[in-house]
Image 1 (tube, helix red, strand yellow):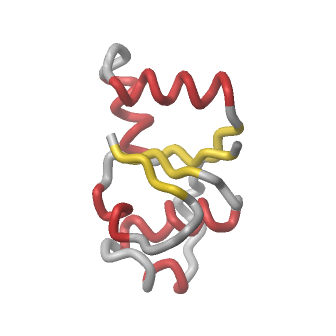
Image 2: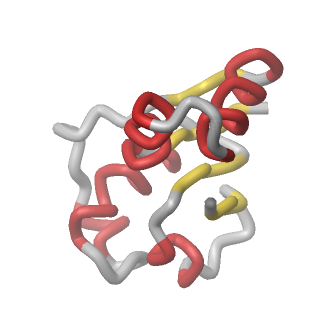
Length: 90
């Protein structure tokens, strides 16, 4: 399974290695294919799908990489009405 890990999860995992985001990141890295966002890739279409324009590059990377899951701490992703990728919020 391909999983996109949002920047906030990466930072949380580094700062708090014993908390849930770090555990989820380690599990995903050990058992799945991780996809990270290149924040410089921007497309206008995802901006219409998510309320916060700062999240558009993350969503764009997930769509372009055809990921199965986005793991994030950002609740804006919960508002997506997409069948895929699924969203897991910590």
